[in-house]
Amino acid sequence: MLDATARYEGGDVAGTQAREEPAVLPCEVRGLCFEAGGDLIIDNVDLTLGSTGITVVMGPNGAGKSILVRLLHGMLEPSAGDISWGGRGLCEETRRRQAMVFQTPVLLRRSVEANIAFALRLHGENGQVRCVRILDEAGLAEKAGQPARLLSGGERQRLAIARALAADPEVLFLDEATASLDPASVQAIEEVVQSARDRSVKIIFITHDIGQARRLADDVVFMHRGRIVERAPAGKFFDNPSSREASDYLAGRIVL
Amino acid sequence: MQDFGQAFSLAFQLLWTADADLMEIIGLSLRVSLTAMAVSCAIALPVGAALGMSRFRGRGAAIILLNALMGLPPVVVGLCVYLMLSRAGPMGELGLLYTPTAMIIAQSILITPIIAALSRQVIEDLHSEYAEQFRSMCVPVHTAVGALLWDARYSLLTVALAGFGRAVAEVGAVIIVGGNIAHLTRVMTTAIALETSKGDLALALALGMVLLLIALAVNAVVMALRMTATRYAYA
Image (cartoon, rainbow over all chains, first blue to last red; front, side):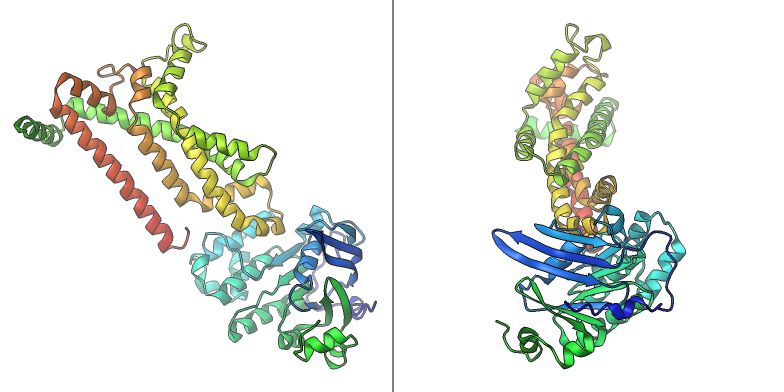
């Protein structure tokens, strides 16, 4: 299997923060299976994720993208196989250095600022200054005191991403985080994601939007029926996909 | 009918002049029921939160039991507390029988299952919304409990007020353990029962009106809380 991430691992990205703890990346997945209700949702997946860059996970509905990401994040127990982060198993410490943003943002019934403060407190921080800076970066400084639930869809998702990044994660999973948002909101979120990538946060981004994948991806994982059918650098994947399924998907044909 | 009208007139007069006996009874009623509500909340909210968040064998049975306890007959609670606090009972040495403390204990026992069962439902609904996010963020259990209780505070306040409403309107338990002693354990409901049996309808009616006003106020507060929470999207 092609490991397109190899090209990122050597180079330092500007803004890389020195971390005292051993790195959680790269991630190695071997023989990963997940079964539910007698169906094999994830079927013997092997995958290597490098330390930086944006890995876009694509595939038709029901391909197993969200399940794969939940397995990687430790939210589901695999039926078989191994996942290692930085050479170690998926422990709580590793999970605390990852963050996930869901398609429908789950915000606390509090103000915008209090949502960020909650994430900061979880990591032992009470910094009001940091909270203001995070909201500023997310373009939500003016809404700090507003109830989070009164934000627009795009703002809610930006807040969810800002809250995820407040924990200073090494890995950020985004599960169709821009689905059903307007173009301006999508652009704002893509800017936040690219800014995170520039700060050396590894991004794993699920999307159905081919245009978005072209804009963001450094490498692409294409899934079909619980299997990774193609893994390639973004340029190669979009210009010359090697699998029939990926070709059909990119051409807008039904993937059988 | 004339007696009825006269009774109403006297009742308004008692309220208007803030009759000392009437005020004493109202004050004790509020003190006993508010204390019982506070004690019950301290016990029932963590229990409700724990039941709402956790999954364990027998949880369904525990919820059924808790829901069934919401219908505890006050006289049975009164009898049990009486047996516990009477001289021959296991807590007889404390000398609490026929004191406001005994009434607080009885009312607390009566409304704790109500507050626990209703808060369990509130917390469970909110937890099902937050659970995946909390799991992703590795939120420790005690932090999750605190966050759920705080974020559901408006709904939980409504639950607490429902418990208070039940406590302040209750007569069976407090008359058994309190004894309806004038200037000591006489509360609105026991006074109404006594004055009605004596034929002193004016005081009974005045107390009845105060009870209705309290019920109205509680409902108004609940409605205001709901509207506030909805307006600010905290509900």
